[in-house]
Length: 444
Image (cartoon, rainbow, N blue to C red; front, side):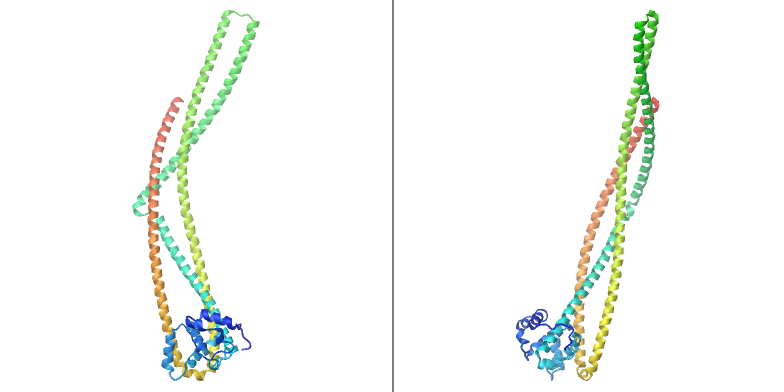
């Protein structure tokens, strides 16, 4: 006992711990510091304390212990009954010299070391139980994530797969979209051709406007020359009349050419306005196609998120496997240590165990029965909780699926109406373009 691997606590710390963690009710109220110091009382206080520790660790009810004691130990005392399991338990707390004297004539330092060793073991047990509960919670969360992933995959399959009733309509929409794309490409080509024609006409108009400007400059120069020549030369009236008629004819020709150019400019402006109108309609079509592309991209993103979730699920499964392997290794190591200690104790107590073996068997059977009852009750509660959660999830998923189907139907109706409107506009626009082309050809 001189070389302890655990701290020896004070009497106050021991009393507060056992009153909070081990004892309950009136026993916790009556257990005080005076029961341990200055000398432990030779009463049933330590016996009840040790019994409550055994009840807490081995998880069997006090009634079972009293029944076993009454059935198999009618001639022996209750102190002997509690000392046997304590001798088996205390080596796990690194206390190897426990005897009946520690119950019949306890000493202060020895009892404090025993109680502090049990206290240290209970602390260690609580920490390990917390770790195991965390691992169980992680395992349950992983199972829940797998179920959620499966449900999400089912939802995506329902959303991506087209029902057979709407398959024909979807094929018709796809064919209509392909036809629209072909018609838009054809119209783009026609618009490009018309733009080229307009550019040529603009170059011609610019050249003619330059020529008109040059003609105006020439006419002004000729007028100046005529004024100078009139002042200098006196010509015959017949020649003057012929020259004036020629000048008038030239002016008339120039005016006629200016009118023709103005008319052509007006026609070209009308053509440009019609082309801008067609460009606006084509832009609307492009916006609709971009909306369709965005919806397809959203579906791709959902598929990518599904792949990421599956990868995370696989990682978590690997982590769980590693944790299970680590737990198995720790359990094996603890089992080897316990085996060694139990062998040593068995060698020391072979003579005493022959008398107490039957009692231990009965206690083990009682513990197993109690554990099985608790496990069955826990399993029944977990199954009932899981069934309730599954029912709630199924109902929520049904509601979500119904809402999503309604949204999809509404989107389908809006798309079909918009496609019909686009067909009508395109047909009207094609008729207008044909009429404009016939007019242009007639003018040319």
